Image (cartoon, rainbow, N blue to C red; front, side, top):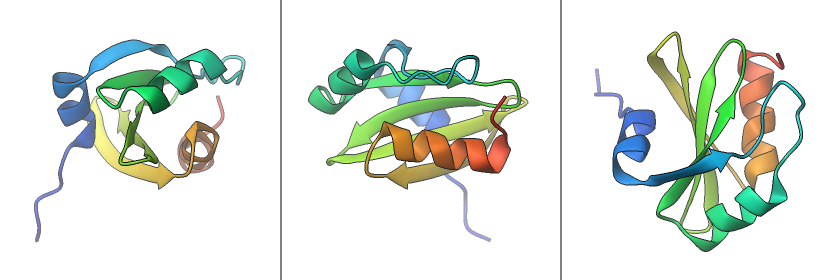
Length: 96
């Protein structure tokens, strides 16, 4: 069995947090935070939700979101932008 890389831990240890890009409380995407993520690939932003917590970042022009649920790394989603990865996370783990 191959070792699973905990992207969540790697990102929060090696990058600077810049705020919340979207919350499942109101589902409003903060376009200023998204633009900062795109412009500076040494940053990450939060995606808090009731059933999980995600961190979102850009790497080599692609967007990623690593998910922890109950403090345990679950998976990482990849997409074209923040809207896509947060939608994938919500579809898998819930919209609340």
